[in-house]
Image (cartoon, rainbow, N blue to C red):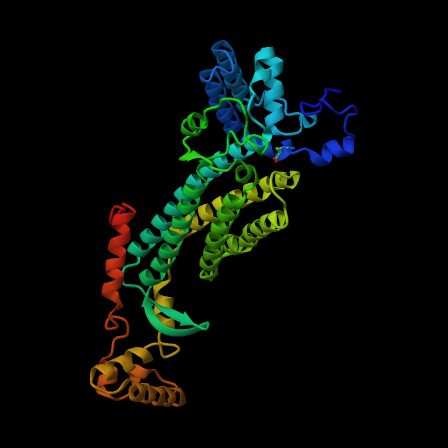
Amino acid sequence: KEAKLWGGRFEEGVTDAVERFTESISFDKALYKHDIMGSKAHASMLAKQGLISSDDRDSIIEGLTEIQRRIENGEFEWRTDREDVHMNIEAALTDSIGEAAKKLHTARSRNDQVLTDFRLWCRDAIDAILARIKHLQVSLVRLALKNEGLIVPGYTHLQRAQPVLLQHLLLAFVEQLERDSGRLLDCKERLNFCPLGACALAGTGLPIDRFMTSDALGFTAPMRNSIDAVSDRDFVLEFLSANSITAIHLSRLGEEWKKNPDPMELVRGKSARVVGDLVTLLMLCKGLPLAYNRDLQEDKEPVFDSVKTILGMLEVSAEFSQNITFNKERIQKALPAGHLDATTLADYLVKKGVPFRTSHDIVGRAVAVCISKMCQLRELSLDELRSLNPVVRHGWSECVASQLDHWVTKLEIAKGG
Ligand code: ARG
């Protein structure tokens, strides 16, 4: 059996049960690309600082490129006895280039390495989610454009309350999604700081250049406090919180469709996983002392799951909204039920100078008459009532049109397309 990379001072190997229990390679191999990226930046920095030779740097970088190629072609053997992604790659590098590889881990610990990988991974994941959110927004705005003028019942307390433009309703979801993007952008800005150089927790006495690695990896700056750098998981808590809110929005969107809703029911169902992933991480971090603790290895799977799930939810919701059509006839027939024009009538009386409480009362009595006569408000004999047209006068239609313009411009949607 191969000796553990970290096993120098331990005489006995671990049992198979412990090996199986503690490995993370089965899931953290997802970080391979970012791990290699981080190692290349680290090797370049070590060479610039004179900590390794430029020949060593070159063979490390070439070796890592070759490993990446092998991984991507499915030729790489991931070994459980090498525990995690960092040690699998480092050991494979040693197998292929020999001594130079043993210098790569100078002035670095897996503690700062794993967080560098993870922050880079989350940064990319956020970009992917942002793109899908935008795609869903575009699909919803297109759906709104396609259904110009369609009036549907708007609900409060699960009861038909007022007629609204379908566009008005769809754009409400577009607004929610915009705030979801905003939260992810905030999160990305806050997580984009580089932990490299924190090493195990206390930094290093070797003359490294943290700004160089931070720059090379596209981070805003190195993290200020090395103990914080290896302890912090609030960037993932924030990320999963943002995903949870998005998931809840999608779940509510899923709730709106009443026919053939199977995929949208699953969108609603999967929102539970995303929230569950957040709760797992909150519980994981609760009560952990500073700095790195092995518990923290459990931070990956909930994040991977949350991202995979939210991406799927966004994709399916967008596909669904691209393909949905509305049965205008049925909607038209259903509209009068529930006296949806009551508010419009009340407002109309207010415009005629009737105090609102009085008009509310009058309309209430008018509705009561309708109920006993089993007719609609607009079927009542008064001329004013008959002339009422529900939505067109309620003042929101212009407002909805300007909202629609706002989103068409912002999301760069070609009108009529
Ligand atoms: N696989 C570990 C993780 O994901 C890497 C860090 C291990 N560090 C340690 N001191 N055991 O957290």
